[in-house]
Length: 142
Image (cartoon, rainbow, N blue to C red; front, side, top):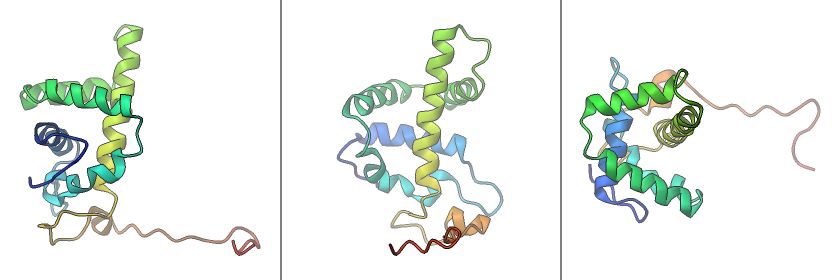
């Protein structure tokens, strides 16, 4: 990883990349999160988040940086299916799921890759193309 961020420390970036690889691993020809190198564009996404939220995320990432991958997998499973936890913890797990998926999936499917990546983007891999269609008689020029 060669990403540089003005928001996240190298340790926090490595933790995000580990989480990204667990959520979005290599699957056949589709590259993993870290292979795409999209972490290089994290600041363009995170700059719009509230400063307090980023500070809390950074603190959590520093703590998670010491966790082995099996614990990160367990945490991500719990955030994906928090039913059965006490209500306050369930709410926290749902928020973490929203944060991790929002940040990591936005990066992965942004179409932006790292400088060292030369393969097709995940969007190209799945054949996604955004086509904007005018609404019934509205061409957007007015």
